[in-house]
Amino acid sequence: MGSRTFGFLILWCCLVKSTAGQDTLRLSLVQTKALMLKQNLQLVASHFDLEASEANLLQARAWNNPYFNWNQDLYSIEKNKYLNYRNQFLVQIDQVFSIAGKYTKTVKLAKLENMGNRLQVQDIMRALLYECSLLYKEALLLQAKQALYRESEESYRLVIESAQKQSELGFLSTKELIRLQSELLALRTESSQNTSAMHHAIGQIKMLLNLRPDVELVLEEPLSWPQEAPPLPTLFTQGENNRADYLWSRNQVQVGEAQVQLQKAKAIPDITFGYQPKDRGSNYVRPYSGIEVGFELPLFHRNAGNIKAAQAQFKKSEIEVQRKENQLYNEIASSVKSFVETRQSFERFSLAFMDEVENLQESAEQNYLKKNINILEYIDLKRIYIQNRMQYLEVRSKLLESAGHLNFVVGTEIMP
Image 1 (cartoon, rainbow, N blue to C red):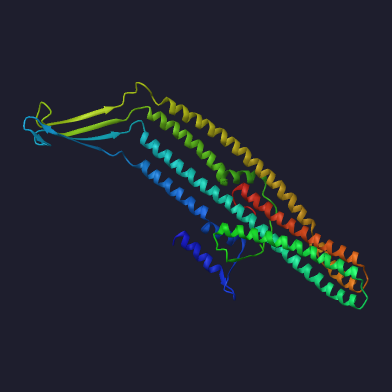
Image 2 (image 1 turned 120 degrees about the horizontal axis):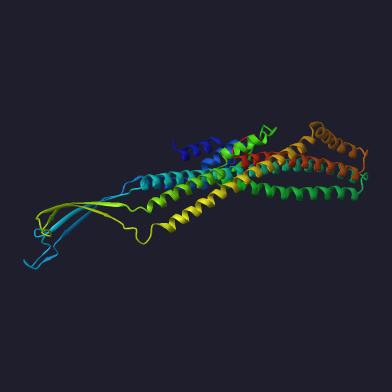
């Protein structure tokens, strides 16, 4: 079964028809990444680069074609005839043989370039997976905020309905009612902005997954939370073994070295062997049979310019490896620090504290309606509740993002 067919099967299995006829796609983060690897058009296009690279390797392994030569009379003055091959014709077959290991060096270079192209595709995949993970977690955060906005709007709506009844009976001033309605209006404005950002993030995910615009995408909350990060030496080793861009830079050193060896080999001319099975009419012996040996005389150049250029490119690739290695270590170290700090911030929001905040806002409505607290105290408590819940959601999202970034800079999934 082809990869595209398998991708369509995954999509079909995840699709559930709703009553309105619109497709609803429910995906976890793992499912989203798997579907992106099957459906993303940039990845699909990159596989054609691999096919071209495989074709170049196939071509490098091919031997030189022989040359066939045919020579005959165009016009015979003696017989006043055109194309008189019976009077004189020559048949010759030539074959060029590469020496100094040019054939094996060409094949070796093609293999290394093919491996480099594979690493480049892996790096594209790494970047797309990271982008997909970021968008997914951003959309999750916005979805959670939207749920909080809906909950708070419903709470304000119920309080305002009760306040309107009290206002009609003269137990509540119009000023207080307007103040409550103003808070609700401000909350709905923030909710509208959050909804727009959520739709944009989900739209970006759909583009990555190559989904139709009419598909409703529902993202599911991840069940696991990242814990302790592995020690730095372990992460450095994993990064060296898994980061596609770093491995590609090392591959380019091998490519540069192979290119230098090939250009040096090209300084030695190839040899052409020819065989004339029959030459009638143009030699002292008729018919004539002979052999031919030919090669280029390296008098004016010995490929010195190409050799020097290959050597310069090889030295450049060695420096690039050092730069990539330094970049790799610094990115991993800074990412670990960011993850540790974010995790500590997340742990400050204990479950007990969040329960207290929840109980505080629930009691605020009852106390306000019973006149135990005034409107300013009620609005202040509601704002404290919304602010703390928003901060909790953002820190939780930052924790997931920092874990995802650590996976990105290491080049493999080390954090859930």
